[in-house]
Figure 1 (cartoon, each protein chain N blue to C red):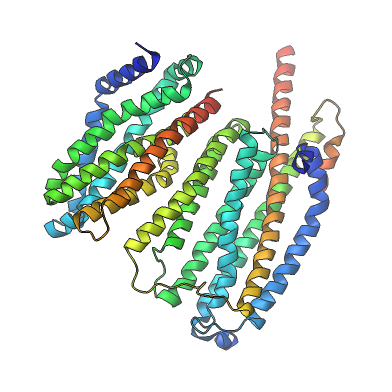
Figure 2: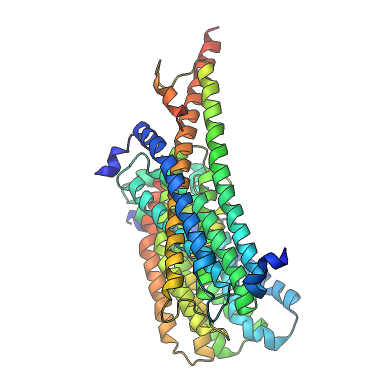
Length: 249
Length: 67
Length: 222
């Protein structure tokens, strides 16, 4: 399987070193095209006026927030079931990036909500679920950092990630239920009956560009994590040899 | 400044804020990834200078420097 | 006496003896219920309206307190390692601990809820509904709590982190618990729908938690 070709960290480092500059470039290009379309080809929405342009950030950010968690969950399975050496590196690298995009989704959702609903925060199903997702990301990061030895923490965090993955659809279901009980006065749905193509295309391009950006960030962060672990083991060896030298002297 | 944003109507501030925050978050991520990488490489080079190798006498530490 | 029963008997004895884990949870529950009117004001109508929510949150928080002692004490004195090595599968050990923990915290909290509910001026139907939903929900709370406790068992100061990790897991139980209570008091939704979901959540947690917790303990202690 292709994934296992990169099980060797050195091969991963070589491959990623070659691929990364292209990824950055492609991401920048696609995002540039997307931004142009977002501002110059997409018309004003008949309901929301220009604030629909916030959607071109908000929706890709929310999509990436979920994609990142799916990536972490998949990596966690790789850690627990197949003991793939880079699986927990992937999970650890993805968490802060996922958290950042979740934060961005919340903030842009809030900035979109104020002119639309008249309030900075709305306890609707989407925002509430994303808020809980944000808390779950923070929990993952906090648990990672609580362990000195990344190796030991890896499998425990993998368990948390998978429990969280099971919890996410339950949360979505629960919050939807809760929301139908407490239906707000004005319910806004941006993805009404249809999305007009002039809005859909910029959205898709921005989503693609954001995804490329995420992948580039993820691979770069994975490289850093591999380096960090090498550094750790080298420092440990250095400390051991220093102690051994001192013991002899 | 406001006449620059005039074509965007009365909610220009919100749109500008949303894009500004997005730029800051993404820039922050890129900066973090770059700085972290540079930091690790610097420390690895430092160890190498002191003669610590990954495996005994391994020469593939040089590969780490490729970005 | 089977190993399972022996373990459960041990847990029960420890909980009843050790500074009264059961009583402490109930007293903390009382503290929370006492604090709220100072913050919200003594308006009895308001308190009656938000009563179910206050009771549920009080139970949730009291549960969080009790979770700390589920695995930590055993980890510190080495009993947890013994349990891992024992012929009884760790998953079943967790089940025994969860049942014992519920009997000594979740159940007393549920039974004391009507008393505190009266302090909040809740009508009898509301009290009945709260007790029923707590009865169905507290096992689930103990189970998801066990997952959090197991994840942080290898850490020394894991208490606060554990609470943060457990909170998203408790939210669905809270939502459906309150929803069922509300349905029983006012309607129009039938009581059974959210109540059955609540039971399902607790049952699901009862199945998932021992597996996840045992795995986390194994990874943490090796």
